Image (cartoon, rainbow, N blue to C red):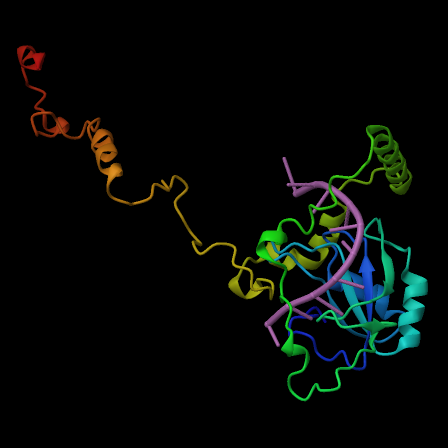
Length: 255
DNA sequence: GTTGAGCGTT
């Protein structure tokens, strides 16, 4: 199904979570499902997204029903190329609530979890807003010299050159995307919108030449007066310009 | 439209 993680964490008590790193930012759970489903029973797949932009953060969590299948998936899918990117599959070390996890399974069972135990010390469900912008920018400044950077870049470039056969354009994702969502492109109906509850924009239809000038009074008042002045519709005399009779004499036009 | 170390949501 396509609704992995839509209904929240189903049950991780008897599931083994795998952490998939180094995936592309366009890779979705549906893309990873066939890969992992081939090696075992996938219970759920979840890809954390950014709460501001809603984009993927570059990693996913795959839950298997059995440990052996999860282990096989790690051994098989670890290092595989998905969407042109080498993914890294490994057992999750932390749970949804940062609980200890061994082999993708929760080992740190809270003894007094009769209703509320770990809730006693609830850490921030989400990253601090102030650090929210930093949690990904922290490692940007690396000690990479331009030489090494250039070398890595060159290697990566070479890798990409070898990767694409003859004419691989960045539209590879588009083709796949179009393959799955072409319905949406064809009929842009309200019913065809993806289950994601993202709101594109409250205003569905707006005039092309819409003037987004805030209708706030005050300083805008005088500006409005200026703009209203050049209106040729009203003559300085208070008489409509079009109301001028063509039979007006030349001498009358000396105003 | 971009980026690339890491551990998760109704």
